Length: 254
Image (cartoon, rainbow, N blue to C red; front, side):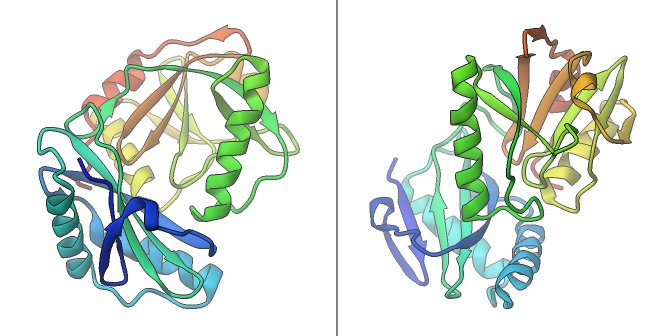
């Protein structure tokens, strides 16, 4: 598979992409040449760019769908597996779309790899939009927890309550119910909520303390490609059955 990028009308190798400007982004789920929820992703991208840059993308969802279909064709993306496409808008108003690596799943799925989580506090960039800054902060947070033998960071605020983000909401299972600290209008949250309802599990929006995490039955995150379960947090072992059930009801097409 070729790794290609569309940049304001040009298709180039991914190695030519230079992300030296701040940007906002959305990740789009694609399968067999079809892209899902593009209109909603574009709506969120416009909102975020207006909020942070003061302007919005002029591209229509139908135009973006056509660009994605052509990019997937030129990239020789497999029709057997789902493939993410990142759409970014930088501070100069330049739009770019990047085809990512295909997953090992067909549609949204529960990842077989589970991660050891560690709670950390610190300065957290904007939690209202996925940006170049939030990507870098996530990478730094995950690198930081490796000194504790962990793989994934669970971010806490100054009062040591769980922080969730629109592009990767965090869900905590306790005694058969699911809790998350913040309700978002993101595609990821909407897809997760519909799956939770479909799985017949009650969802509550409520603050989640660090102490509550240490007594949780399960902790999982949802992104546009699927569900990721934590295997433990601070030596507290976690299960995964509810997350697996939710994943079975997930559809990338909200």
